[in-house]
Image (cartoon, rainbow, N blue to C red; front, side, top):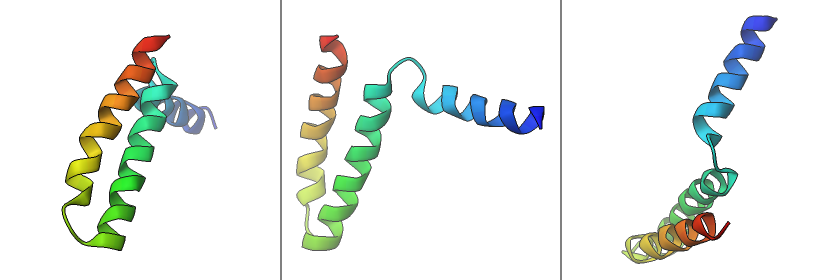
Length: 63
């Protein structure tokens, strides 16, 4: 059982690391890109992704 707990804690530390804001921002960024690609089928994700990344970094640095 301790191996399972260690495995889960490793992945939590690896993904979240020091900033939960950045981890959530990555998930939101990927979901928005997938949704835009599915709905529009155009280059909308390539335009929206840099804006989302910059907003996530600004939110992360504000604290």
